[in-house]
Length: 477
Image: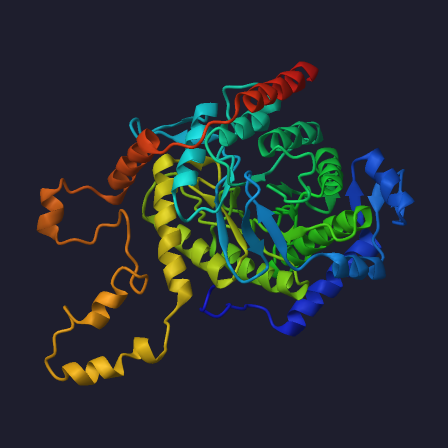
């Protein structure tokens, strides 16, 4: 549980104004929905839906009623049916990154296309590294049929990790077979009872839902699977250039997804998602690690709290293409921002290059960064024993605390952070050991984990059934 107080950038009045303006946008302007099926469903459930323009409008009272039915807490389970997270209860959970395209190869120093084998290795590392609670597809494998890339990724993950699965499908056609794979691995016909998977879905800003995403939302809600709604507008391109306007359009899009989820199945578990993004007009490039995105991580958390919803944020993030000092300060800023926002779920470990590139070594480095910031977020424990007045008085001036029982009591018990790969020894000792920097140390740790860490094999029937699901899907496209 975090002891560091939540950092706020919006006043209560400002949050209400953003909320009220979002409601006006939904009621007066509406959202474009590119799905005849969902338009028909929306109309049948009482939403004003114009089939000619494909615009759906959302009456204020309906939005407010739907917000009341969204659960404030969400229990999540791993593939073994074990409770592994309770979102909305004050604890921050983390997942590795997802849906990158390239892997930065340590030996060549060049980026290359991600493979299915890479996805499995990232999943295995995530299973071992203590800072990651959930597992996601670190990248889309590029050595398989493109339309089935995420199915192959889920296959690779489950052969190396049984943590709660976080997915972000792009097309409606792939959602059902993915859920079939989840059912095979978990040996469950109803993944909504103890949900082992969370599905992230996104609008297409400004104010639109594409067919694949909105139909995936409907299927996900019907299955009872938790939903993370994550718009990603770009300032000055698909949203106003001002941060307040950007946050407002993001919020309106999240609210539209909430309404769809709740009118289809009241009480559906929904996470207020965010991947705050700005646009650099000088370079015509999308940014996810600018200082403005850190501010919006904080603002988004306040709005999610206003709605009594669990909050998702991305981190550790960087827009640079090299594992350099810029990467270090941007990852620190974005991660600390997410923790100061008291985000319930943080996703993107191991990524950089604005989410396009991943690295095995970077995943290990981000595990260390999460560990560092988790220690900071716990703050300072102050009680009679930690104040140590009796020890101070006992030892007095020039006392030696080194062998004192009180010191030994707290040694290795979390009072002080103990890193795995950080360089903290004296120069001569570091030089004698080869002068290895943290990237070299991270690489050695990667090699050690991949060579020694083992996850129980899937039962033979499960392996066969997964292959069959993928083969059937590939033959249909």
